[in-house]
Amino acid sequence: MIRIPVTARIPENYIKDSALRLSFYRRLSNFESQLQLESLLAELIDRFGKIPKDVINLANILKIKEKCKSLEIDTLEVGTKGITFKFREGKIANISGLLAFIESDKNNIKPSNEKLFIKTNKGNALSSAYNILKNMESFLKKEAPSKEGASYWGRFHTGKKPIEQ
Figure 1 (cartoon, helix red, strand yellow):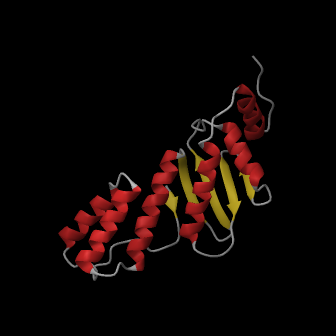
Figure 2 (cartoon, rainbow, N blue to C red):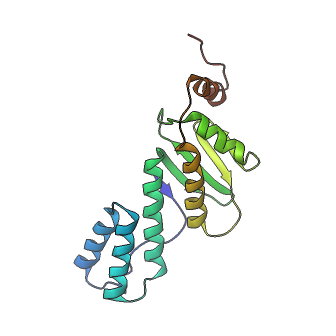
Figure 3 (cartoon, rainbow, N blue to C red):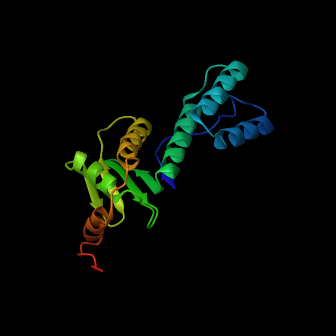
């Protein structure tokens, strides 16, 4: 689930025909690469003129959604003070990468339970969320280490020392 307080849609005054508008919604939501999304946006410009801000917001939310999916993030919620991320239960493959990400900005990144809260400055919520995801990805996509990182996460995540085997 992604909650970002912006209007993201294809306005009726941009694509008047509802069937055609629905077709573009489908095509936008099924993009498979950044290049395909950009090509679709170029087609919108060619056919309907300058892209309205609401459509740009929609495209950016779709990019954020795709990034969340690849990072196993279940929920992203933008609030007035920052962004909360919740990972899919048991899906963090690189615990030490996540810990390194948290350590990289521990004054602004606050973990609790299965969530991370990242304090952000006022500004464009979409670009803030996407940039944080790209930064997080650079830590999480690195080679995952062994059991040691996982046992540290167990202690960190639950507040208890993990059971030793």
